[in-house]
Length: 386
Image (tube, rainbow, N blue to C red):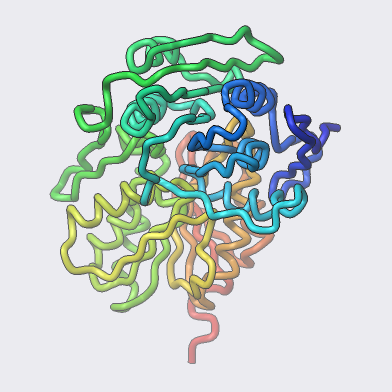
């Protein structure tokens, strides 16, 4: 059993993962511990340094540095829930909502504390953005668990920032201290990458933190024909939710089939929300759409006639069906009585059994050796109609 307590250079934090029932999943790791130690070593007491925390996971960095009143920026909307849970447990009655890539904070910052992401392109984005907002004499302190660092991360750090110190590895974690480099986001060709769906459909692209931004995910490809058929059968003005929307390709398919539908795009990643908004606005000029940065179905979202989902099966280094189960539960609450959930998932995860916990009617629509498409409803077609 793992400990909920993290000893920092200043105090002891009590941290939990929101909604977690597995006591083996801890809300902090050795990289958080190592980062806090290095940050305290570099911060000058009372000097008024402006501190930015980037992509904190469950609040360890934000709460561990609370005396310095850091600005917190996170791609993931899940951090807000973690801070709401863990703030009061550590004597913080009010924690500011983290900022995101929808409206990132303005520099300069004297210290940037960063969790190194798993995606290499997103690491390049973060380092370039940091170069734009870090003070000329500021420091970037970045760290992560060694097994989760992307391949070629050393090369990217060497290319984009000036490494001041590489700390010896500790408890399988690595921390580096850097100074600002010369390359910002403005001259980077790799910000947007995408692909064409062909046959007159709109091109789609995504920012670096977006799932499958360079090619159409094969599970999504299997789902697309059923999405188009379901959208075409809906009456004008019906409400559709593209849940965990990524670059918005499913919602774009809906609008292509019937532009009169009302579509909500929601994703835990703010870069995904920015990307889906970019793609919709590039393809359609007058449609009823809404974009939400939320950890699941947005609060007060109401009911939907069609919900589309290709659920993620990993969260950081944790792989499993826990995210999908939470999204199924939320989708069941927000699906209209005669509505339909269309989803695709990896065959080996056995989602047909999971779906039946929340939906009485589950039908397999498509399958290939790796993926299965399901339709899930509260009642059979035609039930409840006069």
